[in-house]
Length: 506
Image (cartoon, rainbow, N blue to C red):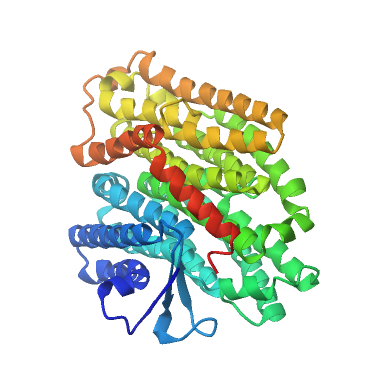
């Protein structure tokens, strides 16, 4: 059922698709206007909480397959801009706003340690703009609006990464690399959108799907598809378009790395799924053989190549960055199989990997705060000195491997099931082997934390403050909870996958 709302709606509930994005967008300039870092943090946190509450309410509304359609300015789509919320993007809004709400209490002390005080208000302003952009990318039902919000998110992200220069000057070159590649990606994407508009005369995603239904042989439509896949592939860090990611994750401030790893690439993958399965439809994609001969082989290559590179990393941040490239490979493999079950597995893995990687990067941020570095040779014996923090890392590591009883196991098991359904038993064996590679690099870190003698300089080290430890453990417990209680995530993923395959409930 389609529920329509607009500016003329009588209640706040009618305005939630718009308020979810507008609240953090308005809070961003206020952070700089007030000029006080404590007020800036409070504004960021409150804006994130409100967005999370709004996203949760919308998710409850669309759990049964309903669609919320919000018409900006009262203009009817496809002429006007539409925010269209179904199970797929409501789930993503819930993840992005939820991660932000958990990360911000952690951020207060971490930012104070890694970024100079004079830049704190600018940090929270850019953080909120990045947050706004990611929410907008996911919520909008207009193709050009995706580009606009993508740029809002990207421009602020470049600044956030560069703020890591306080700790390591290589953050500046990493931000520059991301700027160049991100700009190329955005250019490719907007060229693709231009081709779609030239061929169909509309930018509304639901309307595009209807108008393109009988245009499968159109060369302009096919060219648009190629540009969109490459453009969003760069944003999603799909192998081999991932070159910006390791440096960005390694040298950005710990809070920035945590937030980006859990949300930014996930939003880009959502956009890919929306175009592949709702706008273009699977039959068209298969006609181009894109999924079978390009996406799937690159996904398999990413899983193994990135995992092998991760094994040899000595910087824990860089290790987890390459692990993210491998995990994105799992998601793209699910997309490549193009079945409802594989798409459900991808959506569950988006969520489970988001919470798993967030807890791991937050723990690394705690190590940076206490040991002054994320290099393994500076973390000897920290498992004994920081027992609660390190225990959370072990839980996150087990989830990343896919040990039964953790969130990571569920999505990998679903993916293996969808692979077997496609009669690709050899691929199922490869997926099991790839998880063993994760065992190697996680065990290597655990060995440093627990089996090596602590350095003399770390013997008196204390746990991180409760404001950092509590968010870490909320996500660590979530890794276990969503590994044991899977009913909600699996049902949401099924509804979301069905909505994507049906053109977003058009």
